[in-house]
Image (cartoon, rainbow, N blue to C red; front, side):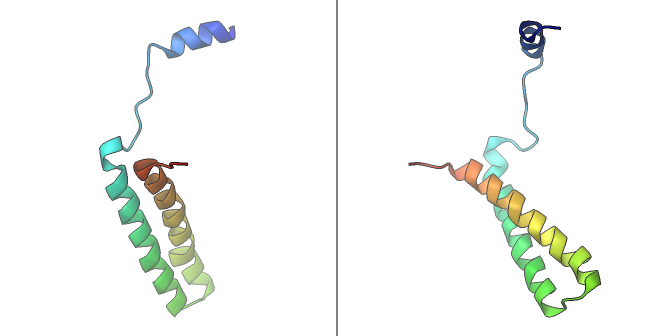
Length: 77
């Protein structure tokens, strides 16, 4: 299959994002807030169990929340 055929086949199914543009700001804000809460809970009790229960979800929430906020607000240079 050539690249041109793949391009033509992809035009039949356009991309639809999981989170729409209108709700990216609220989703990003909620994820960042959840990240701050989990970081605070992780700081109260730093053990091996709390890394899995608070540390990893906090870092994921910060990462995805920051990306959603950048996409919602936009970057202007």
